Image (cartoon, rainbow, N blue to C red):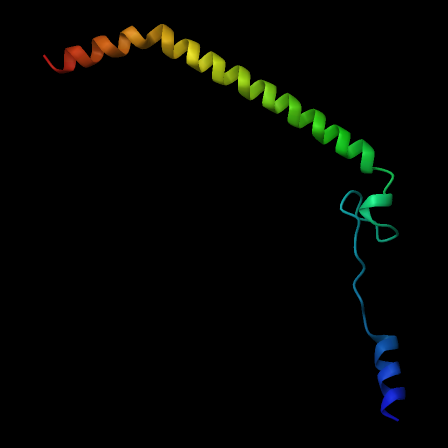
Length: 81
């Protein structure tokens, strides 16, 4: 009798579906998603571009600091007078 009751409970219990991280479908997982390669490739491309832009900004900032370093040294000398 307890076994039949357990079977009925399990038959009506709700089990949430796992959704694909790429397209939020419950019909497949991330490894079989048709968007998997496209999205991963796009993300890699965007990440590469962000890294390139960051490196360019850092180099520009270094160059401008070097160009203006004499301004900082004069300002500090003026303060200590």
